[in-house]
Image 1 (cartoon, rainbow, N blue to C red):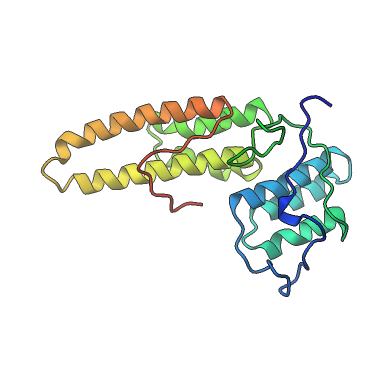
Image 2 (image 1 turned 60 degrees about the vertical axis):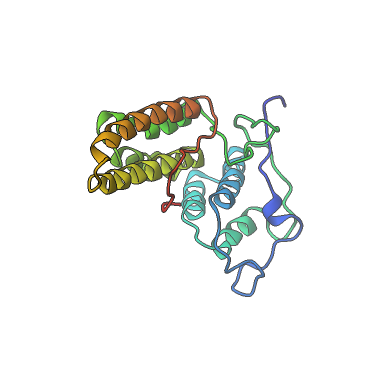
Length: 212
């Protein structure tokens, strides 16, 4: 069907490793992309009717809060058992290579996700600074990997901007550079918001990334 993509399944190609502590990958920490892949499979199972709303919410919450692969493996076993993962149709917008997960992560499934991701970049312009991206990460970001990815990037940028401002206040040239720095920050926030609306990726320059 046109416009339909399949969840990426490269995490568990072939049989799943054991979900317990004895599995080869069980103790390894997961990345945002690992979580997003499992979220895509959960959404696909719900769209197919294999999960009810309660089961869907439970697995989605577990996938989004997973820390190590041992947290994600049971979810995949519950969806597929011990058989190899066969990617199921995923009823959301396809990425550039025909997959929902593009080169840097999950793509937005709805216009609401794009607006939420854009808001994470643009809310600091209203004076919310760190709080705007943080609110989006803790609300819409819990159910949308796309919103979370943009919110985390915007949050890290605002934290870096505040840190640079504090450092510059104790320097002689700080009074000159701080206004320039904040003007550049405003421009970058707008660019980030437009990128999110266009379902694109955006990375702020000169940004520390303590929040993952």
